[in-house]
Length: 344
Image 1 (cartoon, rainbow, N blue to C red):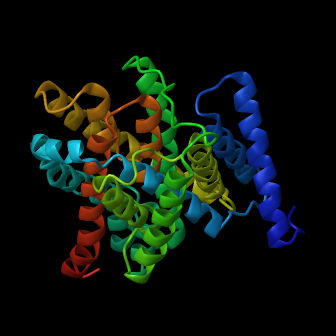
Image 2 (image 1 turned 120 degrees about the vertical axis):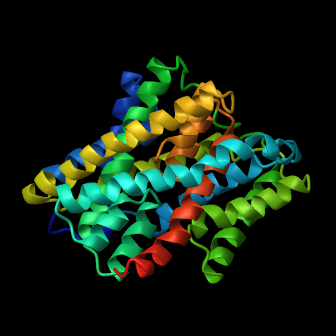
């Protein structure tokens, strides 16, 4: 595969991911369109296969999740926001605790430079933390592997906890079939996805591929124009490309990187899990959230991946996403400021 052109490598990656999806489906394993491509690409990448991501196609697929979240923002959800205020108010404290634990861990125990240690600890979006950290002089490769490891482990373990610890089957319908769906609704969702995505990029909105479509769709939902989520086939496509993206993130990893960087990422996920459990228990025991909603709201995974899990678990999507948006916005806006303040 090494001698293949970039286009051929992408096609080969898509075929490999499809094979992983088929195997998971035949074996009846959970979330085959997410875990099948992810595991197939991960194994191939660690084996040394020069896989290649799907570029803008993968970015476009993320707009589907933005539309799905935006469609869940209804007038009924707005009336419930005051009830979320107390649990949302815990997010800044949660992020602060993560920073107080994570930065010394990566700096003193793992031996990373200050910039890399700081951005490795921050639970923001993978791409955002890598970009900010690299621009500040950090090790971009290490940051990419650490955050990819964080997302990989959380996405892999969370479904097990949901099914085994919380007795929550991941069998909720992800959306209606596209056959028979109102063409006007489909057209409005495509409009929201494209305008939100490209408009968000033009405005410099971080996470434009998800947040842009979410904002436009939410406006149309609150106006009563969009009344359904994207079709099931679209959600499955989004899972497929997200799975590929996680697996491909390990292309070219060396034994040294596995030993130092990836192991550091694994150890850090354990620390994050302990903090997440503590905050989840507090909001659940305080009656601020149900078990599943509390777990998903404070799980330090990627916004896209947590959206998928919230949908298939039948959780309150609005509650989960409000908390993740708060965390992501706080981390992304505060990270460059803190970096300058700390003179990285």
